[in-house]
Image (cartoon, rainbow, N blue to C red; front, side, top):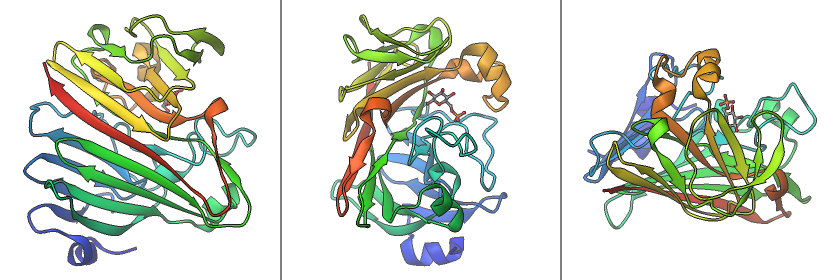
Length: 303
Ligand code: BG6
């Protein structure tokens, strides 16, 4: 792995992109340009923060208890779940949401977009351990474009000679005023698997509002979602392609207490996850030699 100093020499952009070593030993990319600020931990290619210039409160939620530690996922930000979502289909010992969020990634490219946004591309580093769980020839890249909007592209390329199937997610945590006061629009009429209290297929009526633990996998939907937040006076737009499932999740108080890293007592009230996913019936077959890309664009509109 490169040191922060080597990364600064090779990929740093003066006044916009630099790398630093955290106390944990993990390396963090810091991005700051005329449009936004953001930070991303190279382990997991884990975007931790993003604040566009039109907002005083960050759009992405990072738990105040978030810890950076080798091999551990960070609570909050935008974890990359891959090559499966949720529990592994057959191996109970394999990590939930796949291994991509807990392994090292390497920087492969950085640059400026024409409009002034900053681009950074990372690639998952395969190891004996990842191959033991995922024995396929594959390149996984995440490109993050930080500007007034935040764009994330997760590209899976099958470099082998046999087809494979993946589940995946950009499992983004959003900072909100209060979970009891926000609404998520865009999923009316969609079917979803309700994971609270068993697993039942239901149909969404109207906007989503929250009054208890919510853990839903909406299926067969490419719709843009909007988080309406009157307290923070903004609408967060989540627009996607290459994703047919959307997960809406809030742990509520009991589960948040048990999780131990949610910034209790009230951390859970200030977040909601709207995840751009391919899961359950929407897992993706990537043919030999083919590429599949999940793209999500986030935008905060002032109201
Ligand atoms: C969501 C799942 O995507 O992630 C939830 O639907 C899960 O069931 C949540 O609790 C957090 O997962 P983890 O592994 O980061 O604690």
